[in-house]
Amino acid sequence: MDKSLLAKQMNNLKSESAFQVLAKAKKLEADGKNVIHFEIGEPDFDTPSNIVEAGKRALDEKYTHYTAAQGMLPFREAIVDYAKKYKNISTNPEEVVVVPGAKPIMYFTVTALINPGDEVICPNPSFPIYESLIRFVGGVPIPLHIKEENEFRLDVEELKSKITSKTKLLIINSPANPTGGILTEEDIEGIADAVRGKNIFVLSDEIYDRIVYEGSAKSIATMPGMKDWTIVLDGFSKTYAMTGWRLGYGIMNKELAHHITKLIINSNSCTAAFTQMAGIEALKGPQDEVLRMIDEFKRRREIIVDGLNSIKGITCKKSPGAFYAFANITGTGMKSSEMADYLLEHAGVAVLSGSSFGSFGEGYIRLSYATSLENINRGLERINDAVEKLLK
Image 1: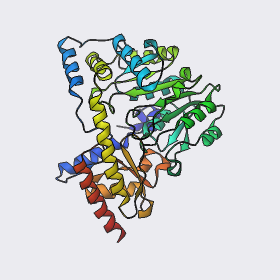
Image 2: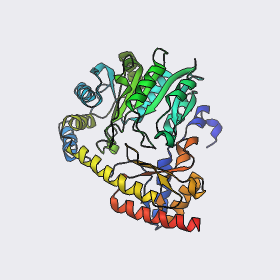
Image 3: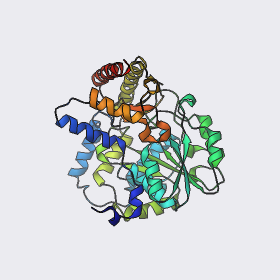
C-alpha cells in the first residue's frame, strides 16, 4: 500500500518492541530453533481459578450483551472499594472508567488532553507507547532521564527544569517498566509540589503497584490537591495474570471521566460484560494467588539478578518492583540492539534492547522474569556462554 494514502500522523505511531521481538522469536521457533523468552511482560501463571469460574458463570448467566460505556456499576463500585484498600484513594463510581485493557486509558487521556504542540513530560527509558501516542496526536514528548545511579527514579529537580508554559501532562510509572524502579514517598511529594497549581495533569501508570518486593508504591492521587489532576491507570493483566481478558480502568475527575466515556462510545462502545463480572471476583475475592505469584517473582528476581551479575561485562541492580531485570551491558562494548539481536540469533534468548524504551535506555537490555526458574537458569547459561565467546 502506498504510504501517501495514510493520514500523516500514522508516520508518528510506533509499535511495541516486545511484540516485534516475540514475532522474530516465534519465526525462529517455527524454523526449529529453541528460544528462551525473556522479552514479553506477561505473567506465566494461569488466571486464578475463582476468577475463571466467575467468568464462566457470567457467560452462563447471559452477561454477553452491551453494558454502560463507562462500565457496569457493580464493577465500578468494586474498583472504588479496591482503590481505597490498596491505593488509599477515596473515589466514587462516577470517577471510574472501565476499558478493555489498561492501554486505552493512555490513548484516551492523551487524545482528550493534548493539542498539537503541547508538551508531555515522560520518563526515559519508559514504556514506548507513551511517546508513540504523544507524537501521534502532535504533542511533544519531553524526556526525563531515568538513571541507574538514582535507583531508576526520576529526579524531581530535573522535572522542575522541564516544566514550561506548554506543559500539559506528566506521565509517571511506579513500579516502572522497564527498570522496576519505584518512586519514594519523598519523590511523590516533590512531584506533586512541582506540578500543583500549574494546570498540569498527571497520568499515573500504576499497573505494577501490587508487585512490590521492598518499600511501597504510593499514588500521587493521595497527595493534597492532586486527585482531580491525576488520571490513575490500572488493570488486571499483571496482578491477576489476566492479559488475555483485556480489562482495565482509570480513576479521574468526574468531568474528564465524562469526556473519556465519549471516546469509548466513539471507539469500542464498552468492555465485555463477562470480563467485568470476572473483574469483580478478582478484586473482591481471595488474594492468596496474587501473594503467591509475588513471592515467586521475588524468588526469581534473586536468581536472575545474581546470575546476570556473574556474567562478565554485565551488571544488574535488584529493582524493588515489577518483574523486570534492566541489565547494564556497557562492559561488553556492544550497543543494546546489537546485544539483543546477538542473543536471539546466536544463543536462542529473546530479550529487549534498552534503547527500544527510549534513547536513555541505550547500554541496557530488559529481561522479564515472568517465566519459570528452569527457563531463567537455562537462559542465564546461554547468555553467559554467548557473552564469553563475544569477549574472547
